[in-house]
Image (cartoon, rainbow, N blue to C red; front, side, top):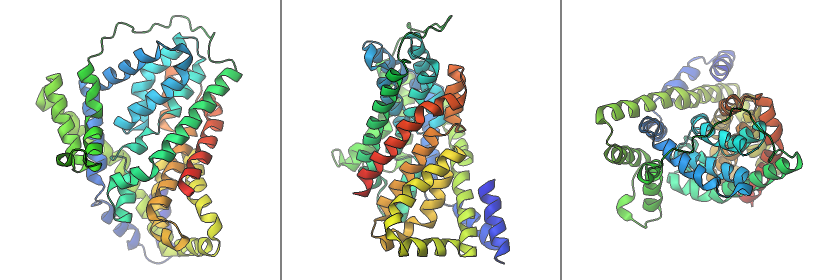
Length: 392
């Protein structure tokens, strides 16, 4: 709402009101729609069949065997789930419902348990269906897997640093054990079906094998891989095909409302900035001070993600307005786009008003600010390390 209104106001102020509406209409035909919508459709299909629960419980059973690895293990486990199911809020709900009770049952402080799950909710950056990846790929004129190949090391490095720092904080605050929650019961009887647990990662495996040319016949688009994954899931789980199909399309509609809507709004906002000449002024300022470009590309989206609770709005606005001009600053489009995406994602992961934060806080029965208090330092360190990998 803020992006759309601000864009329209700026266009009205510049005497070109139709530019805002034209940008909105243009965005509705964006090429990234198939990736984002099909990925969300697949995610809802996984939830409908219960395959996401099998994946999460499979990871949980492994974690309980090594108690001292509980906190970092949950972070990595949540991250893995988020790679397969690219929705921070969806992952927080699905993984949090299993991992948070496990941590609390093991004596971990409720706020630390929630923070551990929240810390892992940016694995979606490694999913080709995350809207930012095809968005940057489209601007750069490359394949979406090329974008992921560029930033995956930075992403994983930031995750490791975040996990280590959060675990250290847990030990320092003595929140890693000894906190008993009365009446907490864990479902230790859940029987994991290995085939069901594998289904959420099928599309990712297909896309990776195809992109690396290990299996040439698997080289295909994101939407095709998601449909194949859904079909295989239907066969393996023996789910009613009509019900699964409906769930898949429900997910596609949700993606258009939750993800594409933000992209459209960001386009309107950028149109307003262009109409007023703000983008040109910003680019001119960055051109005259090239030393601050790398800082702007990361810190800007990070702060906006923290303030707004959404890494998407800030990142899309930056990538649409500034990233196409990356060459003017001695950077590649993929490099600048990846920095903005990682910055916005980490800012959102730290935000107390992000949907995923509110979800994990609710599961743990604590305030969202308690989650942010514990995730703040880990996310700042994660951003610094991640940007060092991307900048040099």
